[in-house]
Image 1 (tube, rainbow, N blue to C red):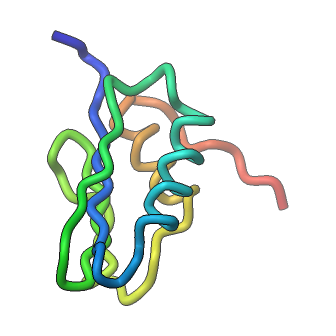
Image 2 (image 1 turned 90 degrees about the horizontal axis):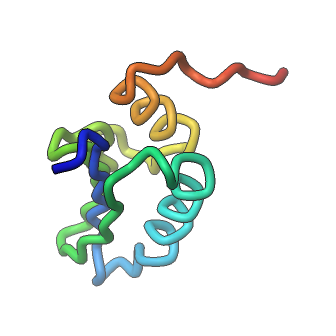
Length: 90
């Protein structure tokens, strides 16, 4: 069993959120591909766009009324890994 976390992105198929989910997955894997045990895209319904790390919801579009910025999810993943947030470049 791996100590690396798993990430899932549940997206609404009716709302055609697949492209957004795939883009976010690509962003996460480009930065943290070696740090995760797996990343799963989960088809859903009802306007859902939820990101989970090890089953814990770290972002819900329904709760926030917006989509996540990749940096938000990367920071949540870094926190799960016990790492500091990435430095910001202003």
